Length: 105
Image (cartoon, rainbow, N blue to C red; front, side, top):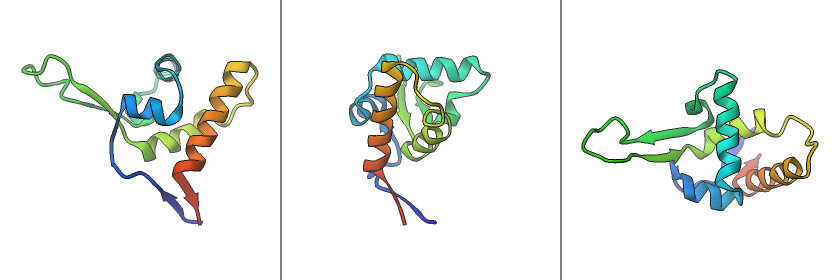
């Protein structure tokens, strides 16, 4: 099986990820919070913080590795059966995002 990703950029800003997935910042923040609460690092979700270690920059930027994010979603978001209307909506958005940006050959 060959997986082909249809992303044009290696990293995408958080705002673009939210728009492409049609999810709120709150949903993404909840996923990150839960992931960290379980003892994991957001780097494993695909989060890349650029410029945060530079004292000259007042604020860094958060980017996402879309391939790693899709893999993370398929392993940790899409495995549980949704039980609330919000979870069902989030899962359907995640499935649509993956269908749009990933092809299996």
